[in-house]
Image (tube, helix red, strand yellow):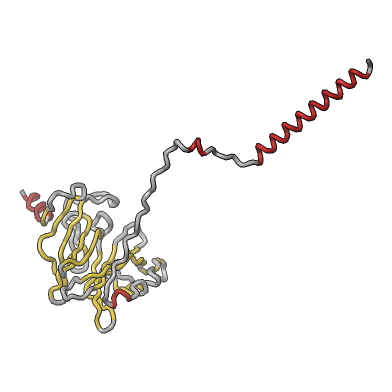
Length: 257
């Protein structure tokens, strides 16, 4: 009779030990095994739609030798008002570092791109090179250089500077029917000589957010490009509305009344 309680104790001990071992093994398995999501659980979920990836606009091509010329490594003249001690800016790999110190002052510049097209009406493509000017401030003006191919080299036939974003900044330029089309942000903006014109009265808006742009046609006449026809101001908010022609003159007449 004395051995029966001892036997019961031994059996209880073995049962507890065995149970602890099973719990320990289950815990280890849950910590180490990867969690698998049932396919059935996901079968009713809607798959996300494919997101379209924007396709970069291909670089324009030309049969002219200008298309093979390296405009990213070239020296460009600077217009009046931006000329530093050199009077020109030399791009190396598309960049010219801005320098402002007691010893040296240099305009900075960055290559933006090149377009090709016949803007002189001679049946041959010219190169329209755009570079961004860096003056050390927050303004982002640009320069446009028009080159033809002559004597086995590019020859500059016109250069002009634009304004800053909504304040006469460059929107677009292209060849059309042997002429050069230049679009500038702002009301009644156009190029006169080599400088973008001053803004007209009432053309004040945030630089970030232009609401108008002006389209102008230029034709090579003799040795210079001459503005053709009316200056057309378009509303960006109302793209289907007709342009206002020579808006600056209209506002000037209204202000005198």
